[in-house]
Amino acid sequence: MEKVTKAIAALMLMTVFFATGCNKPENQDDDVRVTTYTPQDVTQTSARSGGDVIVTQGLSLNEIGVCWSTSSKPTVEDAHLSTANWSEPYVCTITGLESGTLYHVRAYALRGLEYYYGEDKSFTTEENGGGGGGNSGGNGTFNGHEYVDLGLPSGTLWATCNVGADTPEGYGDYFAWGETQPKTTYNWITYRYCNGSSDQLTKYCSNSSYGYNGFTDDLTVLQPNDDAATANWGSGWCMPTEAQWRELYQNTTATWTTQNGVNGRLFTASNGSSLFLPAAGCRGYGELDYAGSNGYYWSSSLDTGRPNRAWYFYFPSGFSDGGRCGRSYGLSVRAVREN
Image (cartoon, rainbow, N blue to C red):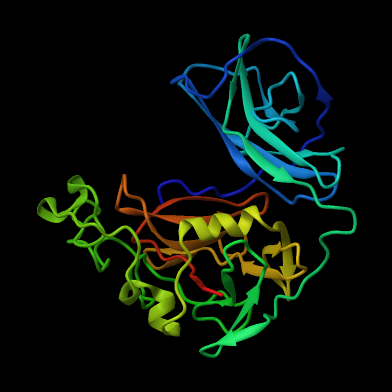
C-alpha cells in the first residue's frame, strides 16, 4: 500500500483562542499542502477532526490545528484549536458545539505569518435525544445474508458481515481488487489482471502508461464477474462504490469500539440502526498486517488517474476516510444491495 497510516496520536489538551495574521485562502502553495480529514465521532456538543500537512524539506511550521464555524471556509479568525502534537496525521477534539447545528471545519498550518488551509468539511451535530445505540444484527436477509437499513438517502442496504465471515466481528476473507477468491500471496506477480508488474495492466486501465503494451479500456467500476461480493454471494449483492462509502460515513456517527472482543468502527444512523466493521487489517505478500488496529475495505471504483490503484475505505482508531491503494493488496470486502 503506497501510504498506510499506522497509528493516530492521542489527543493533547488544547485551548480555543483567536488569532490574526495573513490568511492563505486555500492550500495551493507548493511548499505547504494541507489536508482536512472528515469529521468523526460527532455528538450533540463535540466532534473530532484533524489533518495532514506536507511541507517542502527544510521548511518549518509554527502551528497546526483546526478551525470551525457555522459558515463555510472557516479561518483562524473563527474558533480554532492548535495542537502541540506534530505527528502525521493529527487529530483534534472540538467541544462546546450547539446541538442540531451544521458546522464547517478546516485543518490549517501556520508558517511565518501565513496561514494555509485544507478543504472545507461539514458535519451536523446530533439533536437533543438523537443518536443512541443500534442493532447490527440486521433487519432482513437476501440470498442467506443479513443486511441492515441505515436509512441512507440512496436507500443502500449494507450487509452485516464481511464476505467470508459468519458474524459481524469476523474478519472474513481478503481479496485483491478485481479478484473473487482469497489466496496465499498478494503482490503484482500473483495479481490476475496484470502481466507481472503494476504498469502492465490487462484490464481496468484508463491510462496507457499503466497498460500492457499500451492497453486501455473504458472500465472504471468492477464488472459483476470480478466483484468479490457478487461472485461469492450472488446477483443482487455487490461491492460498494466510492460514493456509497462516502454516503455511509457522511450520514452516520462513527465510533471506535470493541464488539465481542474485536476492535472496529461502529456506524450509527439517525434511525437507530448501526453497522459494525471489524479492524481486520490487510494482506500483502502473505502477511496479515494491522489487524485489530486498522480496517481496510475495497470499493468497486477504479482510480482513473493511476489505474493500478482503486479507491478504498480505511480507519484507524482516531478517524475514518477514503484513499487509494494498489490493486494487488488483499483487503476486506463488505457487500451492499439496493433497497
